[in-house]
Length: 422
Picture 1 (cartoon, one colour):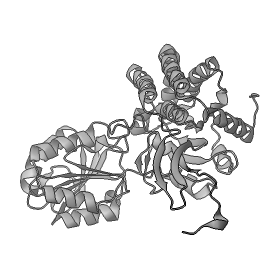
Picture 2 (cartoon, one colour):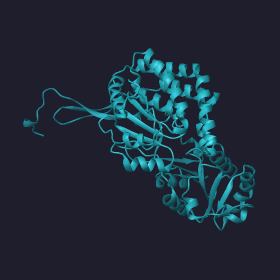
Picture 3 (cartoon, rainbow, N blue to C red):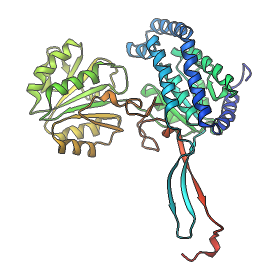
């Protein structure tokens, strides 16, 4: 593709490459993914150097600590990106799979068969590992991918895509199958969102402002990933040690990610004993508490919670806390302030766990497990392309199957509509 190609020309080339990807044999796709993983490892020094330049610019521009955490690529993260590609190669290929069959009274046989979506546009901020995960998942599902990463990660994304292009060329596949928008001009996003003939689906990943801009301006179908306001509810009979372990893992292990806990709800009957143990642990972890009038008495340096705090995705070591009278009140709070992302109940009561999982309709609902398991890899899907909070064909962590659709395949032996007696 010529250097000064317009965005539309790039998208047209990506669409042409998608038709080739859709026809590739599973073994070819797997060999390509393994080659991409090896190339990442081989180019690790270059990728880290380019990422270092991005990180320095981000620090100079005052990017938040949470965003910088998402931006950094170190040796471990390069290895994880490569391992994710190898894992995707090992996953079952959904393309061509017959998912359901049935017969009609006139003898025709009807089936659903999985097919690629086509061109998937990813619009995302900060995290260059999304470049790798999106490329791997889209290619394995027979799609091409059109990438528009954030300006803060431009050099990192360019280095990763350059490595992937080398692998595509080795396999005689057009490099346009992985297209990186070659500009940081924000106007490019608005232009992308009008390319209805070239792009089949848009998946935005980033802050709420980006998601809303894409959803409000796109003429292309959008799968939204709004903010992750994730809750942990501690039931009246919960194992306190377990609840604290899950709280610390969910809030502190990586506070800048979307499956980190943002709000803690505690049943009034267990609140005194729970907070007596949890408060010093949270203080030791430097967690800032925004507390309700009841819970604030248990914390030395808490500040009163506002309505906005319960609606917030802090992405930092800040936690909103509320004491509730019942599980019903906890569920009502989640329904009011939640973002359909991830919720946790800690309980010893099977009936309560069952009631919670049936009534709470967020994308992922966990019983006695950390919110950090709301992740495609942890749930066995391989590297995820995002976590959908849109109740369309994909809801929750999106793996390979979410990047396909289904067509009808109908087999008959000469049946016609004009002579039916059924």
